[in-house]
Image 1 (cartoon, rainbow, N blue to C red):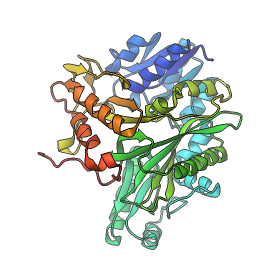
Image 2 (cartoon, helix red, strand yellow):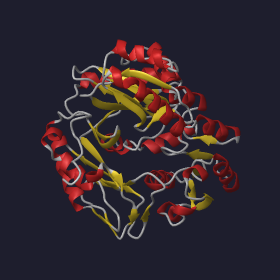
Image 3 (tube, rainbow, N blue to C red):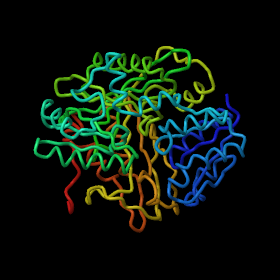
Length: 448
């Protein structure tokens, strides 16, 4: 095992990684922007290094400062968390060139799977079921339009290097395609520095289900079951759970086998997630691979008893997987509590937390780096906390989620959160019976 790990991230995920490192006897180095100098991570870490000002491009996404911090502190490995540089193949390669270990897949795998069109092409050859669409980027607007007409509307235009619900447009009629194509290319260039896009069929009334995998350097790959991420806003997840309600176990196992074979075909190493769309006929189709730990990984941890970050560290240190048969027990639900106002189309609502009292009780976990007196910065993602509960079955997990959400006390000037919306959602009839889709649980209208 490593002696020292640098965590190239911030907020709840950085603190969560640091805690596992501490349990494994690994020294923790934190990096931080000037905005985060008073963070809980800085207080928790064995050593902290300032790497730049608040804008992420000048701190958490500025690789030279992170690598210099690793050199100065004697770190042997870098854990990127999620977001920022976690899926940047150039950063993974730079870490390796410094003689350090990148706690994630090899840079070549990150590059291959991070390019969504390349991933579709690679995994299609491995037998992965895909939605009808392009396997190559579409630089010719007329050719893209013809393909969309052939597929049939609605279609979705996606950035080849996109992710996190950004860089995409749904097109419902041929007359709207040309403008949407131009807008998506422009947004892709602005967000990802790459204007390439592709087109695939859009399934409106769908379930979004993903498979968690772990793979080592010796060809061993296992899946740890599914997570249902169907409750979303603007294609970004709000609630995740396992097991997926109403999804036959046989379908889950077929998805799991597809993810395992896909990981093997790609030469995957580490923790990763294969994301799928499940249509109203119960058929599943590949969406993308996330080459990192996921925001929603705790629901898998609660039903399996497996610390996914510890497994990431062990695999990165060269150990083989030693999990044996993975047993999944009970049900778990995660609710993402963001500093956003649902009544204003989830507009960001940052500020200083004059009140922050998380819930407790049996089988309730809160992953957060927030504290009373701390600041939710507009410079970063709006996530304040993740509430994760476990129960013997889904009905009890829903009740526990609702109770815990009602206990949360979060307030301050300018602060609004999604906690109330989440409480309404988990107790809604559609969610309770598990008939919701990615488009059926919509936010309240402004003023309601």
